[in-house]
Image (cartoon, rainbow, N blue to C red; front, side, top):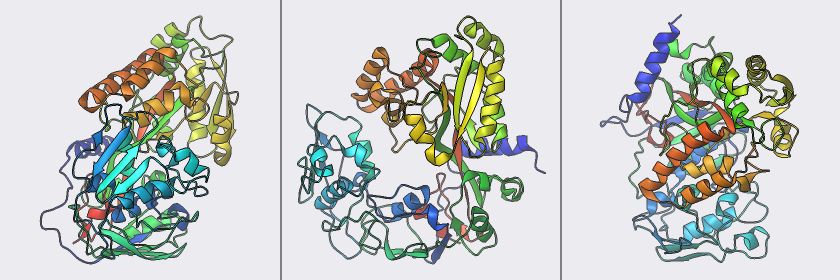
Length: 515
C-alpha cells in the first residue's frame, strides 16, 4: 500500500503546480471522446435547467457564455442599475446563424418563464419586470432589451455581482421554446452542439464548425452512454478503456479497494485531484437560546471540533482540504488567517471559552442519513461532551433534510453544505449569512445589524477593493461572529482512460484531446 503521507504530499505538490497537466501545444485533433454516466446524474442539457455536475460539464462544451462573447466589460450606469453589454462579431450557432444580443435576451426570459422552475431564476429576480414574467403576466421582462449586438439589462436595485451572475447565460436561438422537461437537441454557439438526445439512453455532441471563440477544443465530438447502473460500473469502464471519462461521486473515486492514487499517482496521467468549491460545515442556530448572543460558546465549538477526525471518518486526506473559513481557498478574495486548529482540537481554549456559557448544556444536532454524516455527528457529539455539551443527534433522510432544516426546526447545530453557483464571494458570504436570507439559505439564522451592514456595503464595491473587503469580512465572520463551524472544501477527482491527453488543471471537458 502506498504511504498516505507520500500521497498527500504528492497531491498538494501537484495542486500547486498549475502547469503539471495543462494542454500540450501539439494536441492531436480529431476522434470521438466516449463518456459513460448513470442517466439519473445527467438530467436536462437545456441551459435554463441544467444543474447537476455532469450536465454542467456537457452543457459547457456547447455554451457560448455572455462573458465570452462580450467585447469588453459591461458599461454600468452611475446608479449601478443598468448594464450595457456590447457583443463581438464572429460567433455563430451550429446552423450558421449569427449570435446577436437577442440570443441572451431569450436566455434570461427562458430562465424567468413560468412553469420552467429554472434553478437560475433567483439570480435574475432583480431584473425590472422579472416578477411579472415569473408570474406569467408578461412574456418577457421589461428590463431586458436587445438591438443588434447591444444587450441591455435594467435592474430594480444595484447588484454589483451581476456580471458574475451572467456567466449562467448561454446564447440560445431567439425562438427557442420553453419546455419544463428541457429542450433536447438545438443549435448551439459554443465549440460543440447536441446533435442527438435520447433521454436515459444516449447523447451525441458534434463540433460546431461555425464556432468563433478561442476556447481550446480538439475532438470531433462526444458520445454519452447513459445506461451505467452504478458509479463502480462508470469507473470500471474508464479503467478498462471502454470509456474515456465518466461521472461518479467522490467516495467512488477514493474507495480504498479501487486504489486509484496508488495505481496512477495524482495529477500525472489518468487520476486527477483539484481543489473544489463544495463546502462542508455546521450551522450554529443563533435564533435558539443556546447560541443566541453567545459568541464565546460559538467560538468554543469551533475550537473543540476535530476537523481532521471528521475527514478520516469520510474519505481520508485525499477527500478534501480542511478549512476554518467560509470562502473557498480558490475564490478571489480568500486569505488564509489560520483562526482555528485544523489538525486537532484545542480543548484548553475551547473549555476556557465555554466556561459558564453552556446554558443548560443540551444541544440538538441535525444531520443527513447518508454516509459519512452519521459518523461525523457521533464524532462531534464526543468532541462537544468535552466542553460540557450533551448533544442529541437527529438523523433525517436526505430527501427531507433541507425542508426540515430550512423550516425553523428545533435544532441547535445542523450540517450545512454549500456549493457556490458562481465565482463571487457574494454567493457564499451574503447568501449564507445576510439576515435577509434567514428562512432560506441562512441556516445559522444569523441576523446581525453590524454584519448585515458590512455584507451589503461590501457587495456594492467593485474591482480589487471588493475582493480585499470580502477577504477581510470572511476572516471577521469566522473569527469574531462564528455562526458556522467550517470543516472542509471537497477536492474534485476525475479519472480518464489511457488514450486521453490535454487534461487541464481544473478538468475542462471541452479542452480534452485523444493521444
